Each structure stands twice: as C-alpha cells, then as structure tokens.
Length: 468
Image (cartoon, rainbow, N blue to C red):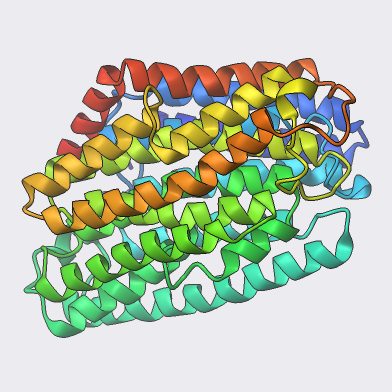
C-alpha cells in the first residue's frame, strides 16, 4: 500500500456525502443539510488545491495515480460541485420530498469523477465511471414535474447503460490483446487493429459523458427535463472528468494510430457542426445549452487529437475554465426557472431591467462560451487552435473558427433578448445572498482566468507533462 494521505481530497468529498446522508436519515431540515454541504464542498475545493503538488500512488501500484494532471482536474471537479451546491439553497425545480437527498447524490457523483481522473487501470476506471453515473441518473429524475423528470432520467439511463456496455466490451478487447488492464502495460503492447477498436469502444462511455456526437442524443432531452440544479452539475463537473479519462486512455493506453486519429477527427468536426447548427433553432434555453455542450466537446477534442503536450494542456485548460463559464449560464436558468419551468428566450427578455446582476452573469457566460475577449473562453479557444496549428491541423482550425463564428448568432441573440428587448413583466427579480455570491464567483473566475491566464496555463502545462 502507498501513502493514503494522497486520497485526502476524495476522502473529504466522500465524507461530505456521508454527512449529507446522515442528516437526511435523522430528519434534519433541508436548510441544515444544505449549509453542511456547502461547508463540505468548500473543504473539498480547499483540499484539492492544497494537494495540487501531490504525487504518488495511494493504493496498490499501477491502479491509481496522483499527479499534477489528476489534481488539477480534481480542482475543476470540486469547484463544479461547490458552485452547484451553493445555488441549491432553494432548489425550486426539485421535488420537495426529494430535496433532502439532493446534496448526497451530488457528492457521491463527485467522488466517482475524482477517482476517474486518477484511475490508471481499466477496471478501476470502469467502477469509478459507474459510481459517478448512478448519482447523476437519480438526480436527473428528481424534477418536480414528474413526467419531464422521468423522461429525462429514462433517456439518460438507457443511453448510459448502452454506452457502459460498449465500454466494458472495449475493455475486454483491450485485455484480450494486452493481457493486462494496467495502462502502463497496455501502452507497451504493439498496437493492432483489434486494440484500436477496443480503445474506441472503451472511449464511448466517456464520450457519452462529454456529449460528443453521436453519443450526444441524450443531452437535449435530459438537460430539458432534469432539475436545473442537477443539470448545472452535469454540465460542469462531469465534463472535466470526461476530459481527464479521454486523455489518460489516449496517451497512456495506446500510441497515436492513424485509424484512431481519423475517427476522433471525424467526431470532432461532427460535434462542432451538429451542436452549433442544432442550437440555432432551439427556443428552450436549456436545450440551447445542451447543443452548445455538444459543440464545446468538439472544441475540446481539437486539443486532444493534436496528440501533443500543448494539445493536452489546452484541453485541460479549456475543461477547467468551462466550469465557471457554463455555470454562469445555468445560474440564470436556475433563478428564472425557480418555479420548475424551463426558461425560454422570451423569459429572458428585458432581464437587464429586472435584474442587472443576472443579466451581467448571463452576459459573461455567453461571451465565455462564444470565446469573446476578455473572457477565459477566448483564451481557451486560442490555446486549442494554437495546439492544432503546431500539429499541422490548420484545416481543423479553420472548421473550428467557422463553427465559432456560427455560434455567435445564438449566443448574441440571447444577450440581445436580455439587454435590448422590453420585458413582458417588469417585476424585479429577487436574488438570494448565496446566489449573488455564486454569480460573483462565477463571473470573477471567468474574467480573471481570461485576463490573467498564465497561472492556470502553467498548471495545465505541468499536468500535460505528467501524463505524457
């Protein structure tokens, strides 16, 4: 056994899940459970940051690695957890009798995601993947509008189960060729067509979490039907974990292979194009964000298919900054849909007059997703495109730039509604102190990491070196 202190960040988040469970069992009020969960989430972020420089293997050799790569992604995951818990003080879209259990499932899923990014053995990775998924399946079903919640969860579970089965089959193929489930031993195996097929199949479960085309079909309906607070967590933390696992598999399991690279290039282009074109015709804000997620997954793949240290660093950087960017958008959805309804473009008309804070938060989120300076979204795309150019993928950068231009239409259209369209209802929107704090944190992170990206970029470079 190794140094178990390396497992402290995960242990703190797991303790948070246990605390939330105990409080629900003894009949505490949701308010007490929420306050305790916020405190534990803060501790989770603090421990993840404190353990940024940690390295080693807390368990048996070869199955679980703590390094600069895993620790930076854990900061992103715990940040997504904290922000999601912070705005769930009064989760209006969650069934009232289920609210007491809501934080517990958030914490359990976060533990699974943290384990995913450290797993260096296929069975450990698969177990962590399933641990992170089960909580999300339940969260998706907790919408106060039971029909929508049931439909969202059913589609999420069916697609998740199918991708999980395919992933397990891919793992079996990899094991059949390499005679090992340790990534360090698999990479030493001569790549064969069967190995490449196995890796692609094993990736399917993670591409499903990232909502990459054609594994994206669950996203629009699940985003639309799941509780707003649950979708906030699904749309932030799970993306960071997915990027970590894809990078581990691509760079530790098998060297770059022409068939593998070509397949990922196709998925990259298809995700960007399908996501942006589909988002243009959506009216429901959550469906817009769902298809935006598909497009953003394509941008992230630009860095990974570059198969370079800079490409990995740019993908890590983008995954981490994506958390506060998309959180800003979902925070507005949570407030406007506090009664359980799904905000539409007409719902945000005149938002600036009703709540300047929410309008500013929405502006920062949309600018970040569109990649407009001075947000971190601009720097993220800059790093991704730069990595692709250095890998002689200029044509891919051109496609990405065209898609980014197309996306400006629907992102700026939302901003236009919020700032230039007269409101149908001029009643001021009241924002709770916790929500105001969350909005301030989200905007600050997006702008600071865009204006001063050096610190995060240096951490991302160190993380990329740890995995290469």
